Image (cartoon, rainbow, N blue to C red; front, side):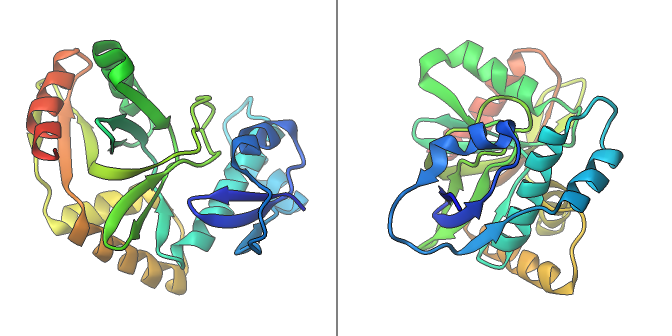
Length: 237
């Protein structure tokens, strides 16, 4: 079974469909490390998932979603987690812009590409991994791109995690711990058992101790990038 190096985990993934196989290619591992775990969604799980997805979804997309979900539940117990976000790399640090679907995280990060061109790039536009290594928060690329086509095999220190709220005007606030936990939970995994939940809370606690968090209240005007840069990026250098 093929092995892949994702966020420094050796993962066995047996892709049934071409979409996931292609996404995983940049993460292919041919070394001697043994697998930390395997991710193989059953046919019944894939079909059940597909029946609950939006009309027009394909079995390929169901496989990607199912694989990402199983992968996330595995890494939660290993001090890591997927964060639903668009991870932008600027000056060697990753800034994760997280929001509920439809709020505009990808729209916002694309404005950074327009403004800063080759100075920035998007590491992953849907599900990067966040983990700590020696007290340093890291953002790691994954194959799970959410259909965006942006999923780079790269690991970068985290500058900040930014939650986006839609607003008529552009401004930045700093969330308290309770708000961070609530927003992180919505951005990681919706359904967990007691064991998953305890590991997830431990991950949150460790991440909060070592990471800066902000809330960017913004509209879709390009001036939102200036507000984020002046009030977030400059504070994280």
